[in-house]
Image (spheres, rainbow, N blue to C red):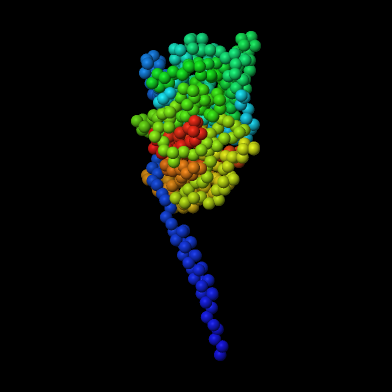
Length: 485
């Protein structure tokens, strides 16, 4: 009787398979890193009156040498609107803005051509939900108080001016250049006029004209001029080039105009760079902060004070798009969910192509929801769903969100952590309210990221909440400082 010899190689292979299976099992069993989300739904109540901060009750605010600014969030002006209604309007505006940015980022570059710094407070306030942040400054001599939208995606500074041929309703008095001793028209032949993307000339007056059109159909047009701006603490900055809009229409509700914070030569940081340098920072407080009035206010700071004590490891280099100088590009190299890097997020999906101007990732104050190139977003969404398998999915999604959860009846919920990783080692570990947001009064919360096929990814202001975002224009770098408010 023949006896089969023992198969040692087979036994070794089996042992290796067992070891690999055990290793995979241990990896799969690795606990998901979580943090606690306070699951507070949207309020079903309608807003009854504008916020105190939104009222025009500061007529003497610039009368003294010490200047105090009131700063508000767009939705502080809402009357008789629910949080859900305001969120729906916010997401509609957001989609149009993201489309405009995507179109502009791929277009050819059309642009021709102290110490301590300047500080102004910034406020948010979802008790009703929105995405645009305002700061209040003084314009002219004597100064007229003006609410201005902070916008890192625009360069030109402009505001509505009397006399109005066509003006939308704004909070407070419309600036009248005829009553300002520091107002100066810009001549058609001046270099400032030649820097405009869409400039013109009134031949009769030899006055430079400007026009800025936005993707949602909003437009502002009028005279291009120089004027003195006054900031908190009484700091005055003379000869700031700005658009004095006599013909304005669109979605500029409440604000008097826009303070362009982009990288272009006509932006506010560029214009004050000789005195303050090109650095600034802002902190956008939690969009639900109106529930706690004491935490409403924050600041935007221009100059050396903007950097504060930010450590070098918090910075990531700015990336330059040679075809669009306005936007602040950074290199996002990955995202972690539950403490583990998301697989399937290819660098090519998030990298800027300098030859075409497409791709890349920008940091934008005016976009609410972070949008990632479709393949990168799909990988992130799938990783989050897997890590949050213990939460009850809400079928159907909501608006642009395709991943929502039913957290009704729950007060505190453990959710997977989410961190964004940037070139140079910088990391933004997001608080839970920066990526799971309430969308109704029933307890539905949605994963506040979205996919885009528009060619450029955008880090929106929901994800920036609670961070001091530092734009070091002199050092060409950006930082996300946690708990910097």
